[in-house]
Length: 225
Image (cartoon, rainbow, N blue to C red):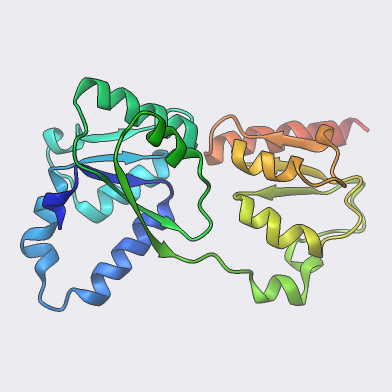
């Protein structure tokens, strides 16, 4: 199948992990290690950020600098930045065959629209499904670790689906500060009428370090009160 594609697009670590699970469950004749991995490893791969890049290295076992040079990582860690990374590479070396794009069932259209505008071919297929946690529905306040002794709470969201599933179950949001891991998640928060945009913060990049920076800023503001 790899001969029909120019390369791969990975928009989250979960995409790589889900693909790995699929290979492990279906590869009874060891075709992946025998020749399929070697076929894909010579293709170009586009990753949304450093965490996804690490998962790709772990799964495909890139060992040479020549192989690693074919992996491209977006600078800002979001779909728009990844689209720009792909378009820049397409100008350097044309993309004639489709890029294979494993994704979740709740993916946004941001990346696909950018690629279509530039006539870059791609093919999506769903490798995982996002569902609501049963524990969250049973005990939303405990899941959010809300404390009545805090003057204000801080909620961190890592995806638009987290906003969709969790917010309807949470109460007393007036004094809550919200942190979005990226622009798509921020947009989902801004679409909630009961949330003031002044209470929404966004990480500069989708990394633990950037999140820690925002948290320190907010905690510092609370300590000043």
